[in-house]
Length: 201
Image 1 (tube, rainbow, N blue to C red):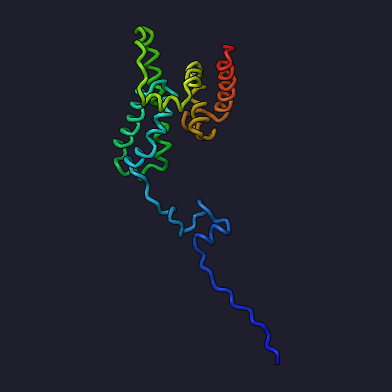
Image 2: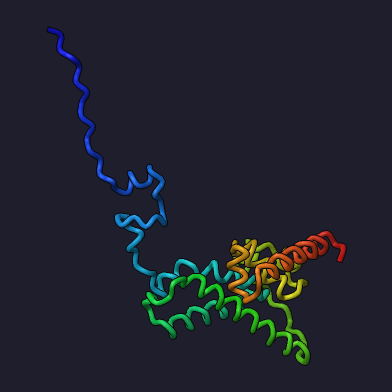
């Protein structure tokens, strides 16, 4: 008698992270086995080492010079540490908190600078250091100069949108304005920046 072929039994596969990914349950799915779900919040020191240079570049685009930008970023990290300590588990979005602090401090610097320039003669230009060249070359000096001719609000919106790569909603939250205001400022800023770079202004 001819024996029929038997189909080997399918081995049971545990529903682990790899299986979850295959079924579309990737990051943010809330899968309990995902090690990222229980990842500890970074400390202030870890944030400083990971994001300081990025924050300095952001501040440079807002305040024009590296020394002031470094002070702005240092103040932002210091304020975070004084308010929450080294462990910042109470801060839901520490990076967003720092970004907002950098923008707000930069705005304060620009206000003080405008007041000071009203009665103080401009200081002699300093020769850029090697570190200045590293940061400012990457930020494109020509564009940086053009940004300085925009209104503060338009400049902030462009920097946050195209250099910090924030969404309209994130920019609105950071600057405390509506998403409609973000859109209109971005559109007008891009038009003005184009005219400046083309030498029409």
